[in-house]
Image 1 (cartoon, rainbow, N blue to C red):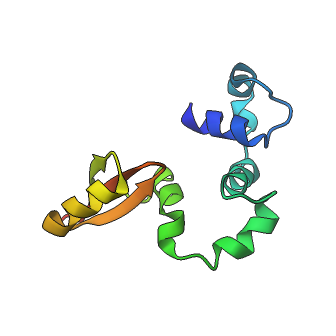
Image 2 (cartoon, one colour; image 1 turned 90 degrees about the horizontal axis):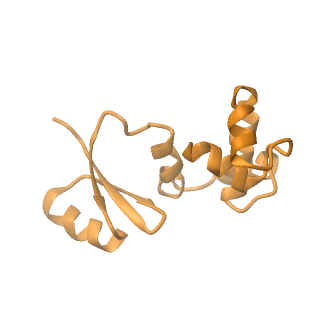
Length: 111
């Protein structure tokens, strides 16, 4: 449901204007819809305009989206209310910080 809400907010599937309608049409969701959603969330009109910009960004800029895609799925995670709190914790415990909206998550590498 969170992805459906994001798709709806981005307005990339014009045939569905409510969450209920989008849920009913979820089988029609394609990669192009998700890429356009990400582009809109990053402030671009669509994926074509966004792709060249994304390729030049530092990984930390897109880590939140990698996190949503499951890129850190096999790692232990510790959530924080703010990025500042996570960095304080990181100094003592290590890990990799991913900012997620106003929150942050520490990704812990397993030995």
